[in-house]
Length: 425
Length: 191
Image 1 (cartoon, chains in turn cyan, yellow):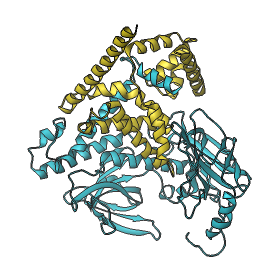
Image 2 (spheres, each protein chain N blue to C red):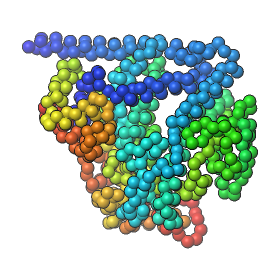
Image 3 (cartoon, rainbow over the protein chains, first blue to last red):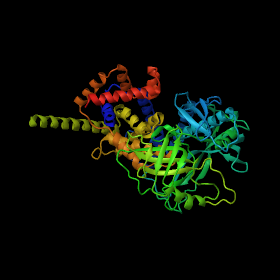
Image 4 (cartoon, helix red, strand yellow):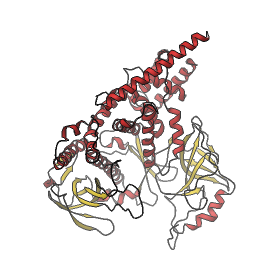
């Protein structure tokens, strides 16, 4: 069937195609052309002709050039952000149910669309088992906040692109980039400084200055706003410019030691602070499993169960990488467990059997699980496990052999803490 | 008969070389400043999106990755060496690397070897004009005609399953079913 796909694509008539995609791509190239010029101008004297902006401005003195690029980036940022509209009631919970792990699960519109409009594709979230009882309204706002932060990150990345490495950069060069930085509560803000309180452990209030010679810009509700419209108590996200020393090769002594250069922008968020912070820890995202689109695999920390030779991160010596095989992942609850096999029931209710070499699971439970002194890491019936494996593309075999397994992991979410001391292993 | 076959094959080989030369010339012109990169986007975008969709399993992400790959290809065009690879191979490699980065961000672990094997299986192949016509004819003959519609919409117009479902007012799963059945018919027809 894959050959059929390749033939169909190759036979596509010239006049067909996705005009919207082509237009967006060409626009992205033209927009990126403006941004890409900056690092090139600084470090590469042999500019190809197609770098049109550079050709127009290359006669300018460096200071004027830097000012021009910064002005164009700030100008563009208004345009980009204006296309991202956030409203507190934008997210809707499409479905709420109890899944086979016994957790409450929520479906919401695809995050790619939460900043624009709804589409049929959904994202799934699971309320953690140890989370407090939360109302649907609180869940909705927490997911909305996550979506909003994703949108803000995307906006910052597009408006102030982070520069990558360049072949002409020398060891010891100073390079700079702009990044989203602190989430907190605004105390005061003016064009040249802002004070805010943030909550990493004990609340701390600090004042941050603008970059030398630059004004801090402000955004809210999808538009650039006068900074005077920001009020004490607003939940905000700051964008800062940072300088660090470039090292071609990383060594223990070449710590880049980022040095903040000043506040670039303040973005006012739409919800109270707790929805971006503490409430986020109660929800686990459930993305579709790689290679198993009908299944969902929670994004949670995990422990290697197999292979487990020495520490974590071992490679399964039996694994055979076959050309053309498809990488798949499945997560579920263990319903049957033997020394060399387990059966898990997946999110969709299907049963998958994973076979491992003799006593692999017993060895894990006796030699490795007891080392985790803070949690009960025993593999047992009821544990949540993820299996990463590969199979021929057409196969949907639910018996997975040791040669197909890349990794079996025990998910930490939902594990019971042990009493007593905490030992890092 | 052998001679006729040999001449035919030589012609096809010549045709392929001419096609590659056209593309190399186009790339040289883009590097020199011509606004012709859109022709390359037009030529490869549908296949590249489907390739990325196969790798990451998400249409929106696939379109983003394909777009980023075109942007990177545009800015790195001077690095492309037509003597070492076809442009499509190079472009698909860029997209595959971006897909791997995306999967790494989304998941805890990714086996690069596995992803590479998918990439190899979906890399586009050169086919002759005559064969293209044969495939187009086979698509036209698909019964019922709705099968032809979904094939054209997905593989030629570059529409997503969701968009096709919306346009044809059918369920998403129906799109998948019709595409699968249409491809089975095509496979038989083109045997």
